[in-house]
Length: 94
Image (tube, rainbow, N blue to C red; front, top):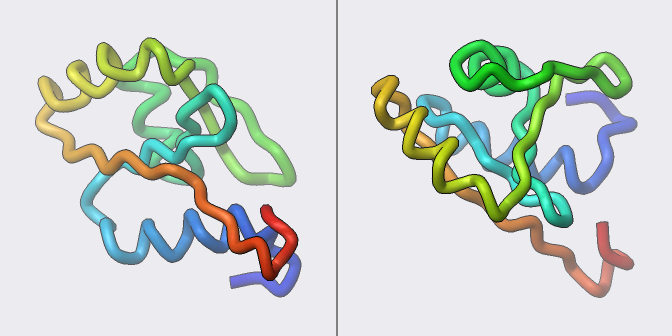
């Protein structure tokens, strides 16, 4: 892992290590975001726009529509892990 990884991305990567076989829906504000290979796979299966930020592939869906996207992934025989972003006030948030 790079030294310049943000606390949010570090949290995501730690979760992904635990759930390697699932597509991680990671809550960021009013969206569930997917990153790296999860984003590439989900964008193809769900017909979502794949973008990049600082060379990290990503895509997302509004949280209020997430159930439909999760349902579709399950129909594709994919596992989905739903994660809410948390912060530690001692660290000043994310």
